[in-house]
Amino acid sequence: MTKRKFIDGLSSKWMVVCLCFFLLLPLAIGAGLVFKSMGLFDGRSIGALIFSSDWSPSEGKFGFWPFILSSLWVTVVALSISIPFCLLASIYLTQFAPRWFLNFMRPVIDILAGIPSVVYGVWGVLVIVPLVSDKIAPFFGTESLGYSILAGALVLAVMSIPYILNMLLEVFRQIPIELGEASLSLGSTKWEMIKHIFLRKGATGIISAFGLGFSKALGETIAVMMVIGNVVQIPSSVFDAGYPLPALVANNYGEMMSIPSYDSALMFGSLLLFVIIITINVLFRYLIYKSEAL
Image 1 (cartoon, rainbow, N blue to C red):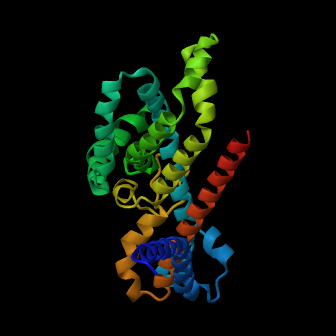
Image 2: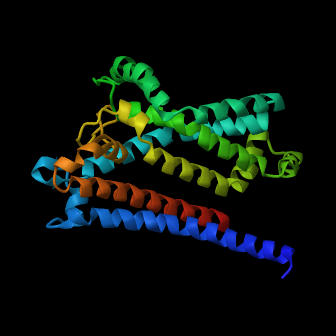
Image 3: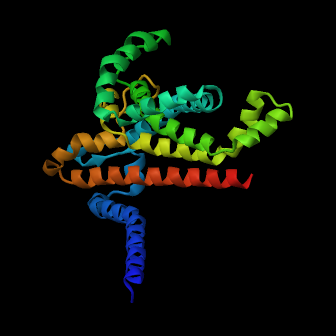
């Protein structure tokens, strides 16, 4: 065997090993969480754990429904805020803005993406929480301490925007400009060209960007934990405090040794978050498949 063939064979095997590692990693994480959660199932059904709202670890009551709803509330509200901003900003930057402005905005977006989440959390405590309690809640005729689902969603929306915006810019950049020029030459307006060419051709990438943004937002911990209130209750409005699953695990992991089954409960909370993210990814993959079939 020549040296060249030996290096080729070694490179191929190394790439297969790397691929297998990434394929097996989610399975290993899921299996580990299931194994660590098994202690919680003694005398408790999965349905009771998921849909119960009784949370009292010292009495052996572990109901995750308030945490699941808080996670979904803050994530859905955050994406409802960030998606229109990202979509319109990406369209403007790629279709209307001068080239120098796009080149100027790219490093700005990268800087926003690189800011640590704890800095966003501090900014949320200093700016967003007072804004919600003093301005937004009174505007809607209600009262709020500011530490709420809305405060968490606003911070999360700002954190998600750089990631989603970067992906959308790449999606629109990959669409051949000749398609748009052909549409304009046939009499389309600029907006009709964007609607029928860029949004339709980029539908798959747009859905992927929103799906990744959703998964990232759902798992964010520190910044959301600092502004959402961390109150175990079922939120009835965006001005109520909440307690998402990542914050539950991060806040209580050090206390688990003193309370029986608390360790398994926190691992089960992580497992729920893991399953929710997988379910969301499968849903977005289905939407991508349907958009490709159109």
